[in-house]
Structures are given as C-alpha cells and as structure tokens.
Length: 383
Length: 254
Image 1 (tube, rainbow over the protein chains, first blue to last red):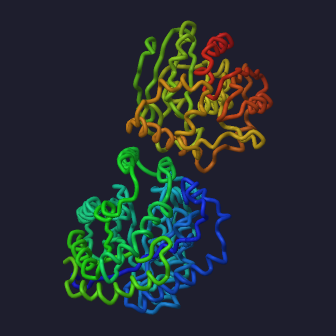
Image 2: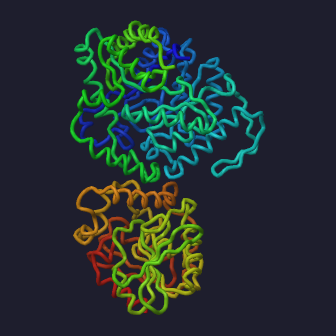
Image 3: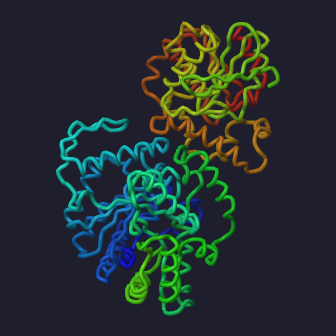
C-alpha cells in the first residue's frame, strides 16, 4: 500500500470578479449580494476551470476533487454533482471525488441515485466525501443546524441501504420514511463508491467515520491537530473493528511550484492572501450557527479565533497549515514529510486559489506532475 | 435574589432548577430566550404570592432536553413540573419567548390560569410589523437592541470576552433554534388564542426594537379578555428599562 501514492487536485472554482468595494462587506458569504454575479463572466470561468481539471487528468493526477458551497464567491459549485457530471465524459482516468453534498440537505434516495448514476456513467470512477457543511451553508439552506448531525447520520444510513441492500426495502426514521426504497441506478463499484467524511475536527464527526469505517479528511485545521485527528480516527475505528488504510486519510494541502522559491512566493502569496482574506471571509456567527457545534467546541473555537488577530502572515500560516510553496524539490520534501507524519499516501492538493490566473494554475499543475510526483513516487508514502 | 430559594428537581430525567419566594397563591414566571436579564425584579410579587421561577430545559441552570423541539413540548414539561411542585391554579407571567409559552399553556389549560400577563410576547407572525430575526442578528448587535437604557443591562454583562458567558449564550441560542430555526412561528397558534379567556394583561415597551409594540394590538384582537399596557420609553425587556412596570403588573395580578 505504502508505495502507491495518490495525487488529487482539489478545485474550489471561485467566482473571481469581486466588486471593487468588496472590502466594505464583512463577508463574501451568505448575504454577499448576488447582484455582483455576472453569468457571462461565470461562463468564462467554468470554461477555464474545466480546462484546468481536464489537464489534470491528462497530466496523470489520480483524482479531481470538487466541493459544495452556497451563497458565496468562494465556490461556483453550489451543486457539485452537476459539475462532476460535466467532467465525467471529458476525463478518462482520474477519479471524480465529490466532497461533497451535505446528505442532510437532500432527499437521501435522490442523492444515492445521483451518485450511483455518476458512478455508472464514469465506470466506477466516483468517490464521495460527506461533509456536514460549513456553518454558512445552514444560513443559506432551510435546514436546521441543531439537528444537523442526527439528520446527517440518518441520511447516510438510508444511502448505504439504498446502495447495498437488494430492494425494495423500507426505512422508518425520525426524518425520513421510505415505503419502497428501491433506487434503480445502483453503484458500479461494489459495495459502493469509496466514502469519506470531511470535517474540521469535531469529535462527533470522527466518531461517525470510525463507526462506519469511512475515510476522514480534516480541512483547515492546523498540522498538529490534523495529526491527532488521524490518530484518533485510527484508534476509534479499531474499536469498531475497522482498519483505516493510509489511502483513507486524504491530506488536504495547498501547493505552488515554481522554478525558484523566490519566484514561487512572488507568484503565489498574493493569491493565497486573497483566498484567506477575501474568499474565505466569514463571520463568527455564520461559522457557528446555533446548535452546529457543541458548547464545548464553540468555546474552544471562540478562544482560538480570539488569538488569531493581526494581518495575513505567510510564514506563520504556511508553517501552521499544510502549505508547500517553492521549488519541486522543496515541495516534494515537505509533502513527503507530511505523508509520513500523517500516516497517509493520499495527497489532495489545492493548486488554484482565489484569483490566480490560468497560466499559473497550468504551470503549477504541470511542474507538480512532472517534477514533484516522480520524486515522491520514488520515495514512497506511509506504510 | 436574596428571597429566592433554589430547588433542583428531575423532570422526565432532566435537571430542572426552580427558584421560589413568598407564600400564597402560586405566581409562575416564564423567562425568555435569554436568561441574562435575571428575575430578581419579581421579588416584590413575593409579598403577596408564592413566586415560582423555573429555568426552562436548555436555559440557565436547568439541564438540556434535546427531545424538546416545539413549544408544546415545553407545555408538557410544565404539566410535569407543576405536578411535582403541587401547583394547580396559578397566575402566569411570561416574557418574550416565555410569553409565547404562557399563552400556549393558557390556551390549552385555561382553567388553571387565573390571570395571565404577556410581556412583549414572541410567537405571532405579523407581516406588517415583523419580529426581528433574533437568530440571524449577531449577538453584539442584538444585546444593545434589547433595552432602551443600555446601562440597565450592561451591568449584567461581562466586561471582557468571557468564554463561559459566550458558551452559555450559544447554548441558549441552540435551545431557541431547536424550536424556531425551521419554523419561527406556528400559523395554527392564532386559531387557538380565543381559548385564552382569563383576564390578560399585555405589556409592551413602545421602544421595543425586537418585537414591535404594534403587535400588542394583534394579540388583543385574538385574546377575548385582554387589555394592553404600553410602557413609554421601554424597550424589549420592559422591566429593566422601567422597573415601575413590576408594581403595575403586581396590581393587575392581585
């Protein structure tokens, strides 16, 4: 298992045409006025982003990762299944990973059907991660954050039943009743496409992944915390009789490769800064709608947010999180070190951020595929 | 709070904290969706009544009950609690969300409520005078909107960011959202308000920035035996802005 490193490209597909006065808005999520959305510009962006992801397939990346966010410039993938469907016939080898739709936002049979159809259309290239969704998604959708986890869990149960049990079956739960659960698309992969849970470190989420034997990826948590989360998942999954493989622990990271370190920083940092300051700009209230977190988690995060004053500091942020910027050699070394520390062989890299121009994304992916991947494949990943 | 005596009960498996003071016929006070404003103002009523102030499950000193998902579940909780406290009939006073609960209780168990006081009650959808969406309003904006004279509330707030305080407010917001995130109001509620037949006093501050004072007239139109007392210069937490309101309510309750 160890030598088979796997490289994903994750894309946010941001809407990059922010109005000049966007700093006047405390956030670019939830309530950021959609009059600033220009469909013609968005069309151009989709063309550009599809080109990048199709290139990723050609360059030999193992997977393309999509995600879902609502009411924001951060992502143009409010319904990622639609985007994934468009990519399926345009790609050949890369797996398509939807990271994903909060299952509690959907009728679970319909989500099971969407995913099964895509798995069949792509001849078994689909992978799925289940997020609870950021707090912002709850302000944007008619779904209570208070019962989110409970509904999420029931939704997953229905989906797994839809995929794995011969129908028709029934389901009578707190949120959903099925008299004939008997979806006609059934997944191409058996028993179902590989599944992960995405989280930002809530113990409840780890617990669920452990119970189901699903993979887990933390997002936007510091390196040390991410490492502890992976360890915790392995230990808890073992209690449930599951062994978590390295490939089940995708490591989300931000990468930019250039000829020299100085050039990489010059070309990249401005976009990364905009990513954090502008595209990910939210409010404490929106990050944590009532009931979305336990009171204990809320206190931990509020205390953490309290400490994060001051402006964008590239050195601090890149050493705290998984961010590799520099020459192919430096980036390969950093990623190699992370895979060992995190016990994974599954690298999920964001290679386009914020308003990065097309040429930089293409250059970044190309250099990564041609000069970073071979170095790492040679060295091997976590055992 | 000197006169109040704390009592801890278990109701349906949930820790329920009740403060009581005075002797006589029971007077129950239902607090609102936040407990920061306290209930010490109710002390004068203890001269004539057995004043009972329970913390709702999910608020203040009481425990959590995630199975309480609508206002009627709270009514059921109080049927149990009143049995435990041996309270049969009562005067009932409710503030804001507690006013909604009091009116709901009175519409279902009218024979047990001798007199009802609703202080800026939550619960009606009045499109021409809409209630502020308190779930969507950030805490730091909401708190100053609760009163006209902020000093009255300020002394009850921590001076510096306080994680315990933030956590307690988040927990109460969660309990509120458990009831009202998906359905802020129940359209069927109005239909049953005509069953509230006891003498009812509707108290409202004319500077209420959370639930507009005009809604008082809607309530009066739906409750047969209601009178309205508008308190000039008072915001949503009427009694903090105008403490003399407490005596006026006391006179109505006798």
